[in-house]
Length: 135
Image (cartoon, rainbow, N blue to C red):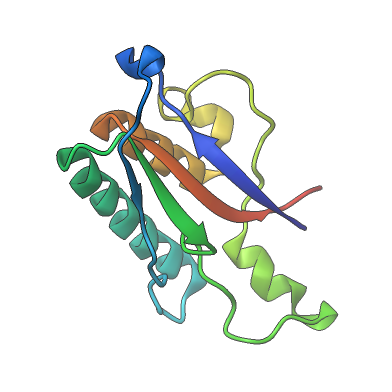
């Protein structure tokens, strides 16, 4: 496994802008004991914050390391890899398309699709960091 930091930039008319208004978020992920539900709830919160930032005029929003997926309930060691795998997704190599418009190509990366749609629907770029499962 490796950690990927990624940026979802949706194409907008602001490409030629010289300055950008940014929102920077410090947040803890949802603390649900179900990793799957934790990710879903945290993604919902992330998209709501992106919407709020966009309404305030931000063009880009930056989330903290592990702020999107959280961390396992147990300390990491080699016997706990399965716990981490539930939080991570297989992030595909960039192809130049928009995951929100081609979700079938990203069936192993539902968080990427959700955030891409959140970025596109709110006309804001979302920067986040999450774990990547490498086969």
